Image 1 (cartoon, one colour):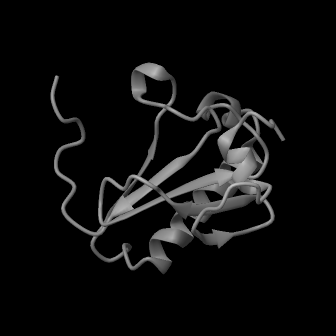
Image 2 (tube, rainbow, N blue to C red):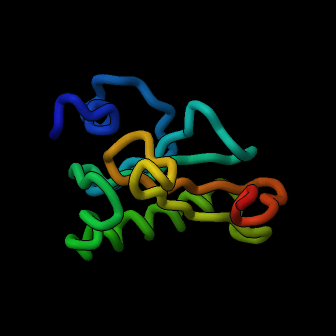
Length: 116
């Protein structure tokens, strides 16, 4: 655990979050600034800074994707569609450097990128 990492502190129970799914290796909780009717973050319990670091641990990467799919199903998103988004690095909009998947849906999401 990285004591300076917001998401590590959520995993440890030091910071409250609305947890919607938990496994031994993942935690999923509602985003505090949702961008869609359903916006859940899925994180690995172990600290990995970004997707590149997560990819070095294929088992953890698979667990995050499985948890994202389980969240989408539980939230009723599977029938109409949803997105799983990983932002990696500052230019991509990553704000917390503990890898996290955004599971978003519940309404038409529009184009992939807002503009060029």
